[in-house]
Image 1 (cartoon, rainbow, N blue to C red):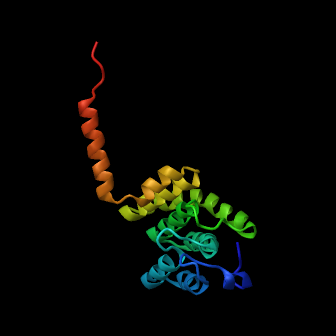
Image 2: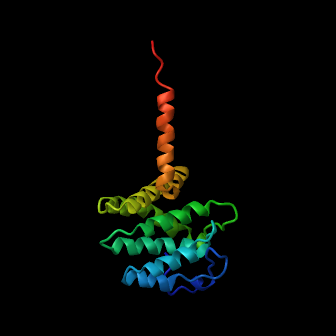
Image 3: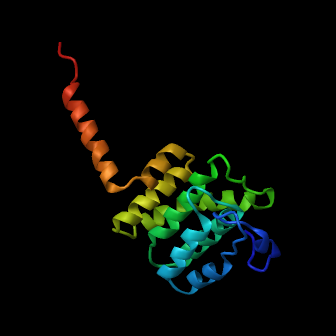
Length: 174
């Protein structure tokens, strides 16, 4: 994990493809939950499908912060899932070699933290965000993206479509 006093932070780009230093926002999150800081992180680390090296560098810290919390915040799992999903989009930069090991270790940690936090929340947004992140942590990119990025109306429509399909096509009769 890149430490906060590492000067490489200063040259990292975020979702807008301009230098982005998320350290001040991450420090605030260490101290307290702040909706304005979450808004800032969402804006700076992800923009219309674009992510950058600062986005990747923030993931291990977001998980480190979540590990220390007694409450579950859907933003952690939703933001890291968005970063992981968008990292695969053509045009987004690869994870730098010097960051690759800590990024992958962070995703290994999602299995432990996500499972812990799933048992500690009844918030539907948190449950969905955690399940999406767990699928991504297991290498299931399409399933993780579906879970993480679908809203309830899309899920309802899919279930209605599947239900109608199963009524039209029943098991063959002897």
